[in-house]
Length: 334
Ligand code: SF4
Figure 1: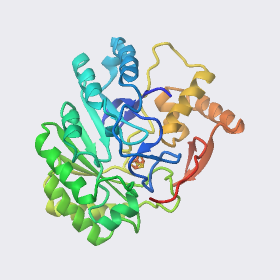
Figure 2: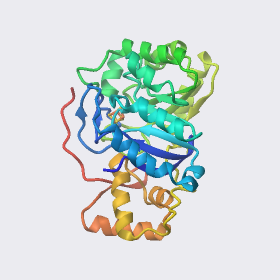
Figure 3: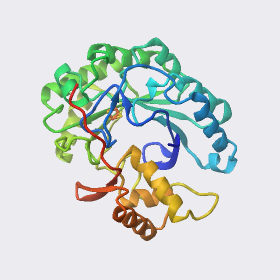
Figure 4: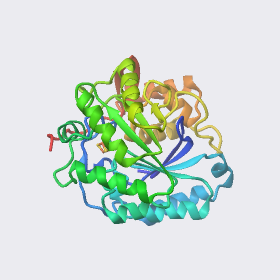
């Protein structure tokens, strides 16, 4: 598996070069809405799950291509899991910052920020996007299904708040709401209190936009998302964005994606890249065409061929056709 992917055209981050630090799906949570369609390898152990030198070597090939780097808006460190479980994350952020003037963003579930060494590692980033889906322990367990080894909710919230005080960059707190799981009035009131402690730069509300790991994880309606936004705005002065359904999803359904300096990619190369994309999230044909800079008809032909050969599966979600890798075996809730 390659560790660099994209770039993807993210509406909130711009043309974003993805860096994936972990084998799928190494995480200390098993969220019901997770877009990665494989069974989690639950772990709380920080380690060099993939050699840092391997990731830096891949990065150096990209960084040597000045024309490609110039086009990028940002480097985004994420993972097919929780990226702060990788002990090389700080070295990787600093390496990018030494070699380019591009900003670096981190997508994290926020659960490791109570650890001083993790906070230290992330200080060199420009934007940190921690998730906090629930501020009541019962809802937290239902939506995120943390591993037994994970920190408790109060420790996690305090860790994000501590990091927010120490960090000079921007904190975008992402809250993903699932119908009847973490969206009650009590849940929103508890989240408001947590936002008051964390004081993020902005709050980003999301819901289940793509096929989730558990089919019972349902999205909120747009009306309910607007109500939650209004509630949160009563106690918070910063911007509150609604991501899902507002075309602010991380991967665009239009626009500039990868600009391949070697020209048009062959169907075989495209199939390999499509599998790499689908290992991280389900995608529509339009997502794939935009990201790989393919003609939409060519992308559809390649996907149909892969579907016939059984290399991927199809799931209709929210009226859209999503392609996924073949499902892994699910585990019981922790
Ligand atoms: S959504 Fe993120 S934090 Fe949750 S299980 Fe998936 S990779 Fe882990």
